[in-house]
Length: 182
Image 1 (cartoon, one colour):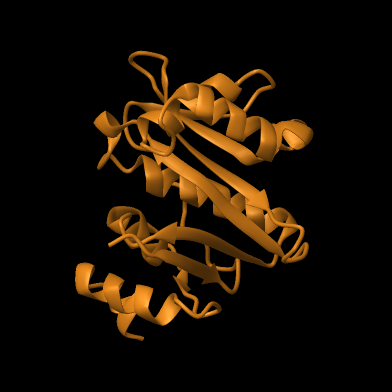
Image 2 (cartoon, rainbow, N blue to C red):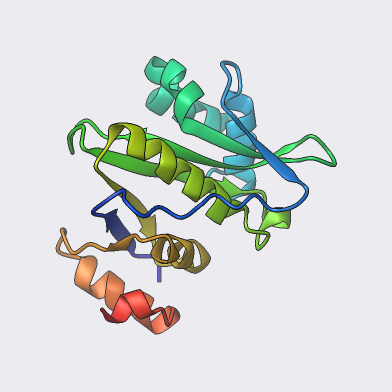
């Protein structure tokens, strides 16, 4: 069952240190990297093909592409030189400047389970701390491994929409994490 989830981190104090997995480096987005982002997010299953990903990128980030140079991170496989995961320390003007939005965390499936998501999320949290007081994200109950990472780094369930109690009850049936029992 795929249900939407919202998670919040009410403070950007006591942030986890970014621990870089061996054999990987990271870099920030550079103008022209939209195809890199689209390739990763398509491989992660977020889009049916790179054309759909590129269209979405243009709609969401096109007008603010220069902001991506300071807010979008890539994990790079040092062996191949290939970007294999991404996370964006974005914002949402509707929530206000105090909120950062963890956005579009994704990895090429062959690189799941190596610590890249946790590494990139920690980098994003440190980026948020420069300009924001709090952070949030949206995800879904089908992203159990990602939700575990988010809980581990201090995000907590939010119940701000009517469907949240049902979605979090379902997540508790999939993931036994202490933060889900607070």
